[in-house]
Amino acid sequence: MKFSFQKPEREFEKLLKHALKGEPRAQFLVGDRYHRGYGVEQDIDAAIRWYRRAAEQEYPGALCMLGLCYEEGIGVEQDQTEAVKWCLRAAAYDYAPAQCEVGSFMVYGNGLRQDIQGGMELWEKAASQGLPEALCHLGITYVLGEIVPADPKKGILLLQKAAELNYGVAQCFLAKCYLEGNGVDKNDKKAVDWYKKAAEQGNDDALIELAFCYYDGEGVEQNDKKATGYMQQAAEKGVAVAQFWLGLAYEKGWGIEKNMHAAMEWFEKAASQGNEEAMEKLKVLAH
Image 1 (tube, rainbow, N blue to C red):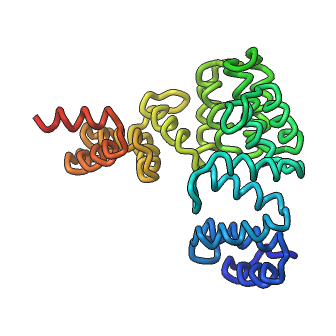
Image 2 (image 1 turned 135 degrees about the vertical axis):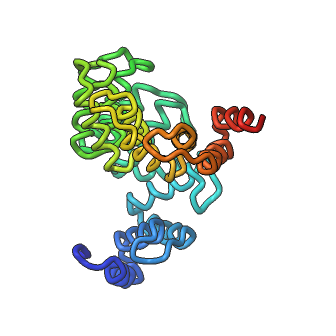
Image 3 (image 1 turned 90 degrees about the vertical axis):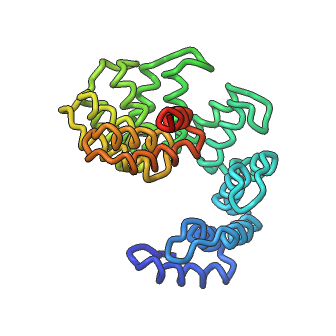
């Protein structure tokens, strides 16, 4: 089956025809389209139904997605036991995303008995298949050295591989390493370059860190307008800390026209998500 280079709606119609014939890959992809609202109106319940139909035929992607849905409580009641069950079934087929997920369950003792070595072995299996998330998990683990002896150079190499595969989390963490000189020579310009690449992937942390780089002139020429622009992108995605800082930008006039009404609105949004700095700010402004 080939469905590329077509309009999303047309592609979905073709997928659905194959799915109704019982083809597990098409059933999984129909579930994915319903999940993301791509080519069809988003319908999480329909996504779960199609994932289950594909999973009944042991399609690894569907088995894994059901596990992830149970882990996050998406379309089903959150249930870590069910999450582990479905991901284990998918991992048995050497499906890299499931191996990575089960590896995390084992490393952190989440639904399975903690087994750091066993979990990292699963990460390595997934990484050997080129899965950027697994490369990133391993890289961060070796750089931090919290659960295994630190090996920053090995960690950086793994992060570099994941970052070059356009994995935003790895790009963001690699940027932080360059900013702090952790495992690499400190290089603010390279840090900013990696933050920008991560921001292009929609990474919230990268947007915020880029904003601070521009506010402080780290690795770039100081520019409050650009800084506040990046902060606004993160704030509009619902990131509480970014909402607080955007409120400050409006209050102080950092790269944007002062506007206390807008500042209060952003402080309130951040506070409604439990941001303590925003809550304190609102108390001060109320007096």
